[in-house]
Length: 265
Image 1 (cartoon, helix red, strand yellow):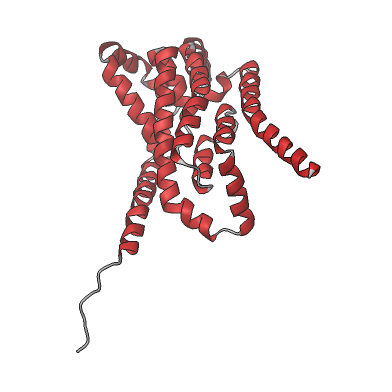
Image 2 (cartoon, rainbow, N blue to C red):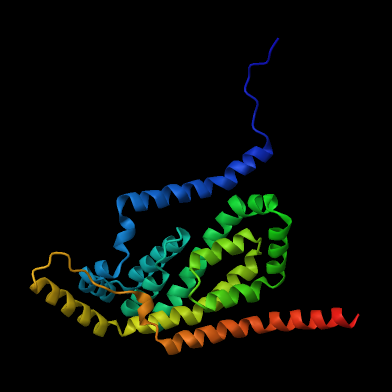
């Protein structure tokens, strides 16, 4: 007789299914956010619209609002939405630069850890196994100095935060140094944006005046032209770049010593 009963999935297939499920849910959530336009709500113009209301809520419900801010930040980073600088700035404005900076750095690290785990278990290992020898060699070199490389990338905010998370996952970086480098590297960046956000009143007043002048001319589309990155002064950007370069000095020294030793043999 022919066995017509469906064969149970092997443990390997079941494990692959559970590893890809978080990625599928993440893609579905991201698609739903962009389809409904919710991603547009995380903008400076939306913040201006609800600024007074948010300040009143923080004044009355400070801790719950801080928790909501952290959850929003974690979700945004997990979904790889490019709003980290904006949220850090708003955190500094609503909660002060010290508390806002700490909350932003912790939330950014937790969100980065989420997407790192999802990407590493769902995509990182399978893609790296199928990659060529050259890519695998680059990944091995990255893993040897992963902490310092990642720390440097965190300190220099010109590299997209989400791209760094995915790159570390693809190259097979371990979880502990990833979290540690992210937390240390995000502290000065988060405090920089939070400190800029604590003095946001002047920027808000200027943007509101520009918008009023635009509306007075009869134009219908008058939006707030603002970027959180514009709050970082050139001096602060140079300081962060120097920190990022200094983080790579031990890597350069190790390469130099290895090269000298190889030439001496």
